Length: 167
Image (cartoon, one colour):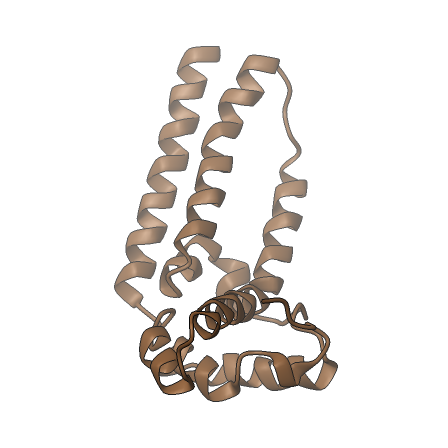
């Protein structure tokens, strides 16, 4: 089922998005309102947690696929640099991470919308969808801490092993 992403009337309803985000998600609901006003689900927004501590924020909001992708990319890079004997400028990564941080609320909204459409297509009514999506990305401080520790450990281990192999 495809929907027109420029027509907010066809987006995930706000009350379903609220259930999806869980408690203490007022900023995400405010982002939803701004996205509806702009008729653009992919709007940038300032989220300092995501910009400054992206791996922790991804864990905080249970964005496991994005966190895993980010971790794998940064874990592989030291080996790629070692094999091909070049250095990738860190400014490029910093800029990329800032952009991802600015887009994080859009990523959540797009994921919620995708999940909503999948459940709606399966024949569920709004009440069933809310029950299914409830607290899917609700805040979790323990997950944020674990994600950040795991991310840092993997990256530092990867750098250490690459330096040992290629220097």
